[in-house]
Image 1 (cartoon, protein in one colour):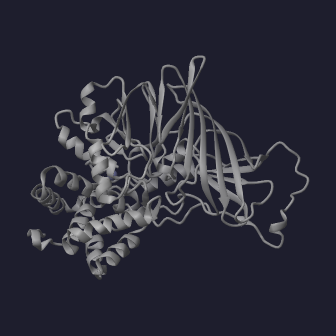
Image 2 (cartoon, rainbow, N blue to C red):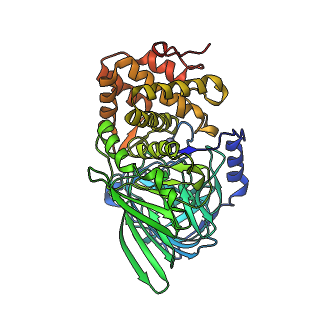
Length: 500
Ligand SMILES: [Zn+2]
């Protein structure tokens, strides 16, 4: 993610959100299925075991309530009919294929707003209860550890406006004039589908989205089918690889679609809002070259396709949605194509670090943003050589030194300011310092090994530092402690950089 909002708003976001949850959102709503339940049949395997409730959070160190425990989702199918584009009024159904990780009497999903029209588990109506962002579902029969199960949730209404816990911007499904877009990092997904909303529970997705003609849909993965019926069209997208929930995106607009591929054959499809001028495409022209370059540096591009989508709306952000990064129009500087290309390189490189290798805990966010920021430097080096990289490093370092309040140490970001300047710039400088510490050859081997070991999964800071020590054969505890947690940015003596 990258955003333009350099004005720090020290709102007590956490407070605001917890108040919304406590008082704004909803009085609890309990619904029983309209069937007579005479007896609960406990499966044979469960005899002698006390099934318990899955936890309502995954224990993230910054956001303990995010996600849910007791099960693992394999696949989501989102069936969404957009009844009214102006209000994003939806009739929807989400099907979740999951496996129980323990004997479960009940389990939770994260979901905000909408009227729920019914929930089934394995085809049978289930009890559910809503409180704040949590939907607690009690199946007719308890689920047994290891058992696959299917949940279907039918719902309708318009997505509620959601402000993130982590930064003061609207997240999730956002309705705009003539369409809508989705930008969910870190907690917006629950605004449009019931979800186990933590990057640790990755799953594959099918999106089946029906919109009135002539609108179109852009979502993650490949468009596999377009079905026109009357004055509506259904767009079906499939993702090949597992994806963190915050990267799921559905965008509705009229698009110019641009297809191309990298020299090495990676397919690219870009979606540009039709109202945008042709110049909007310029900063994206080198994506093929970027995909091939980063494949060389990090390891083979991990997904089946890539591309970018530009909305004709200002939202001061770009986000690396898996296989389809999204840009607000205000992220494109027509006067500075090369500058915008750095943002394009940033989002594209996140496909490796952020999307394929995802954080195990949100406090590890520098593993996303520090890496993507350093990728900007690597792209500069690729185009203009080492001296240009050194100049870039010096200006990044000077920025941190001159604005220390804006750049806290990257290792422990505060929960209400997850995307602070430190996780980006200081995080990126940490990688450059590591490169100087171990030498180029070993540094790039560290990046490749880290990607190879954790692709399609999750990694924590300790996992990265362990790879760095393994590959380099050096003891790096003190190095990383200083670079990730020191109050003041450490000096880089070789480059004559330090705090006065
Ligand atoms: Zn980023």
